[in-house]
Amino acid sequence: MNAVAVRRAADVLLRGVGGRAVMLRMPAPASVGDVTEQLGLAVPQFQDVELAPVVLERGSATVRTMLVSANAVNELVGSMGYSASSVLFADAFGVLVDGVLMEVESVAETELGGAAAVYRVGLREPVALQV
Amino acid sequence: MQNARDTFYVTLRDRLAAVNPARTIVVRSVARPGLLVEENELASANAPADVFRLRWTGLRVDAKGALPLMVMDCEIRYATDGNAGNGGMDRGRLLAAMDAELVAAVNAGLQNVVKMSYAALPAVAMGTNVWWGDVAFAAATVNGERLERLATVEVFCFQEAGAL
Image (tube, rainbow over all chains, first blue to last red; front, side, top):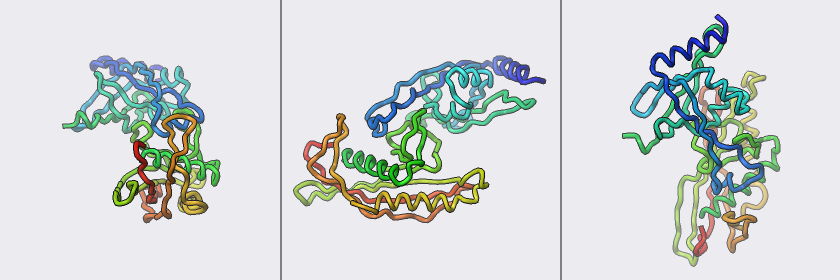
């Protein structure tokens, strides 16, 4: 099975089990030589980009796991000029799910036939929502 | 107090950059000297290696004098995995190099500077100084293939009336 077929199959599976869309919140690049950002005086601009299809699972009370299609991730990596998916997720400020911003804690990829098919992203709910 | 923290960070950043200009970190696509204040950055579960991460923890106030004396505890955390090309076998040497850079930046030379206010740029000099003690190192800890160290510095300043 080639890489394209694997990714399409993953997309179909995620959509078939109720895949939905979330927003990935990305900060704008920092300003070169701007000390105010280093001192916490200036806040970067943010851009929300759609990530779909994804499926969310609840792990523990505060942790969620998001399964996301490799096609969707690769599109963002290409269009936003990142070198790899790991850099994209490391730079992301968080994932916006129904208005709640969750921090990206971990990222792992599932490979099938030598190609990444699905990314498994660990998300942590904000402290304010923890009971 | 915030002005003193900002002044200490900028001083330490510039000194570390002078000691080893090659130690840098890329933050949101921009390279800068390898020192960051955790509370000034976007919250992240990622702890970058081979750079210094500064954290303000304890705070004590001595109000006996004409101006309140503030004593702030500054934690500086750093870690290294070694070079992948060397199989990480040089991680002890790289941690020792970071220890030496920190000693050179904190202990060598003057241990005081004029307090600056960065609320507006260009920064404005204030009427008192910021000064600090020698750096104290905790034992190195092993976290998997990563060697980590916590160093602490006591930073002092006078709280000027109406200042941050």
